[in-house]
Image 1 (cartoon, rainbow, N blue to C red):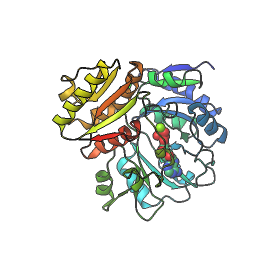
Image 2 (image 1 turned 45 degrees about the horizontal axis):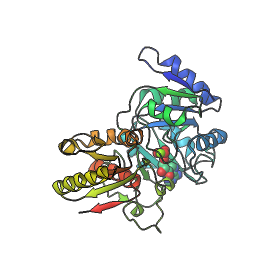
Image 3 (image 1 turned 135 degrees about the horizontal axis):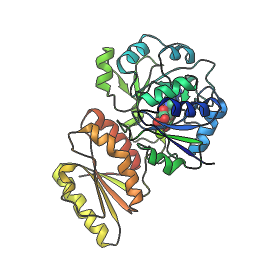
Length: 349
Ligand code: AMP
Ligand code: MG
């Protein structure tokens, strides 16, 4: 299949997006930008389109897709019930990086929800995504546009690397703004629960709702017997090809330890990658030292993460040592992605 790149320039947005929408209305797939990462979109109400999304990504079929909408009215059509909590959260955070899980209505096929009776819904904050959704019929199922297991794409070039020849079209509207996937909240239970940490933090949510928001315990326990409630969270993900090890502890000790390990690896003939922040980047000597930005600038750290993980692959490193980026807020989401990329290999100093 020949993959067409549809480039969006300010002056020519509508006709280009209409071209992409026509593909989706016809049952085809189009990769498109959102503010979080690039998505691989198809008509969410068309079981065939959803099946094609799983095939293009090589995604396990029990891992449900997020349905993207362009207005809140659409939520009523694809859910059995959307109560006050959904409305309040949408008013506060939509369009934006928040995905809500609600009981699905009959028009949403099980192919889209991975066999579940619930559906994940989000309104993205990106003009191209919103226009595409409106012109495509209102409901676009879209997981991140990477091959399953690879880091999520934050530029159209990343999508080309993974999807060229597999889908009819990719919309290129430049790099995304946030760079880490949406926060997922489950609204089907007694309490509001976070199933995947993201740019919107637990504090942001409880401030708006005026009550505590819990976090799926499976996310913080390494206990292999507790399955996370978001099926996708159980898979190794975001992973560079090289083995990756996170080093946790006092900042100076971490830098010294990583420096030593890098020296050891390189003198043993291995290419070593180091993932760090600006303040330590200058002190390391290794084949590939990548800084995510200033440590205090959590948004920058999140925005640069996936591109850095992809660069390690391009540089062909054999082993990667990474600093940790805990620290509340978005740091939580960054650490969640890093732990998965490292298959939970952490050395605590
Ligand atoms: P992606 O779109 O690739 O960022 O992945 C979507 C994430 O949302 C995966 O982790 C899914 O398991 C999760 N998800 C989607 N729909 C549901 C649902 N109905 N219930 C729980 N998790 C969901
Ligand atoms: Mg994904």
